[in-house]
Length: 354
Ligand code: HEM
Image 1 (cartoon, helix red, strand yellow):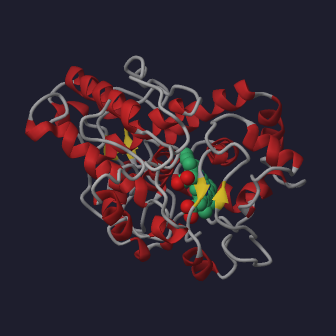
Image 2: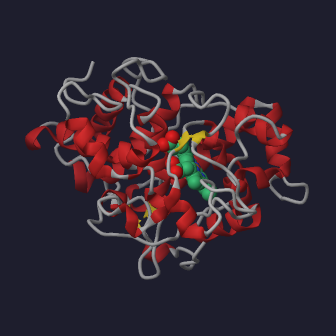
């Protein structure tokens, strides 16, 4: 962790749904449309967790001179992922959003004509969680794109103990950093560790290697990486399954960790995990953003806009799922090449939807 100073309210960017979309009603219509589109196009296991992770990387990154936050900067940062090795492995959703947002803008017409990446990133992540069986989270519209790079290495360290995660969330501006550390880490119920050597190079003993601090290797995050529920907590509490490959996960259940009580509670009670995850995710989705000028606070979001269009397979299908190597996942150029192959659909379909 490289501390960048705690976010201060005056530095926050106002949530601006009316300024961006023209009216609150239009903003809500756009949110609904994006949710429907994402519900029909987050086809496979690969895109879905990657899109949850990208929301975290957008909203929690900041730098020493601006509050950063949920400002769409991750899209720019990922054009040069090696600039911040902590962002490696996010090429899939980067490509997905690059296709989705222009499509939804529909040549500047319709409710989403002014759709921001910053909004789309958070809304799509929410849909991904629902599709994987997680809770529906009421979300807000109106995050501005900064057109900037937060571009720092201020992202939590997978080789750090729970105390460091707590400091990280505190400095990011979360009101209950202990709960945030426990509940939001439960997002690792989903997905894969995709990067290999870059993380090792970054911190000397990363999960791709066999270092003494953080031992791990590419592979699924948990024993059921396509299901969003409390099995992550069961695995780290009982010290079995795949969860715990990241030291930062394993250490949440350390005997002296202040997160241990939450881990135990969530391991025994799926509802308790969902109950805490929803407000933590809402707050995370608004880091760097001040919802008050638009008349909201972090606990008065809108309900998601209706039923998601279609539940799609949560596992890659033969021949159309992403079949790259771990190295492909870390390099957008290679991934994009793959996506543009004729007949190769990568791990999602955007144009046309379903
Ligand atoms: C705060 C401490 C956290 C640490 C240290 C951490 C670290 C990591 C690392 C190292 C990976 C593997 C990256 C790779 O592919 O190489 C990963 C994956 C992932 N993270 Fe986190 N993370 C944290 C918090 C979060 C949060 C808050 C969320 C979501 C709200 C999240 C969602 C995910 C998901 C879904 C994946 C799997 C991605 C995929 O399959 O492509 N993580 N995380």
